[in-house]
Image (cartoon, rainbow, N blue to C red; front, top):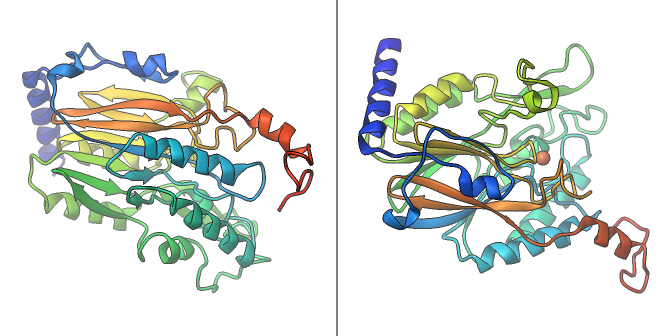
Length: 344
Ligand SMILES: [Fe+2]
């Protein structure tokens, strides 16, 4: 089994080298994206583009901080780019982990209402902040029908937390990257980055059911790879269990054995791009920037426009003009904002 997997990966690498798909990150670097590349690629004009879509993540919508207005402004910008569809990257609300039922439903209502402004279909990926009540055993009992992932399943996931679909010859995997575990004897639960055995088996069977040469793009909230911890604390620093997929290696191997165009992720709120044998791992900056307090570590509020070509994907990080400091000022001026100084 392992030898078979290695052969598939070797074959995939040889095919890529044969097709001379050279890699670059220059355009992304211009947009502030941390990038790793292996070589140069031909000018995009020589490649056939199939379609574009938007990947937006970490909206953290809430009544406070202008989040709703910011999200609507981002949607307007996304619509103007005329994508085929919008793919969310999780952390859609702020927050369900530690609130009661009324607050969680208010946030979900707000997100769903805002999404009605999209001019294109929206596919949702679940983030850790959509998980309901696991930090709050005093507010939400574990036997609540919406506890944990059930609220997302019911309201945004068509009864599921992971699924797949095809679009113009490309296979999309929308994954659940959030594992829930006991919190070291403390009350409540914790989340970690995890695919889990059951979902991993589903990914295998899902991929087995599509043609071997069909390109695959996967999306999850918690990253397969990020250099966030290493950038902050040095290259030998380990990533936290809530920062990356703790069981991501098997998933990565499974994807690399296919025509794996890329992995779209969020969670960190910064722009990152890794390129490995033509496959791109893209961590998308947040619509909310630093949780609606301004850019995070210099990474502004925005989303990715992803262009799909016959031989891979390219991404552009797009900002939408949000200025959290201006909004904060407006919040204090009753002439501009009648509910100044209040949270609603
Ligand atoms: Fe987030």
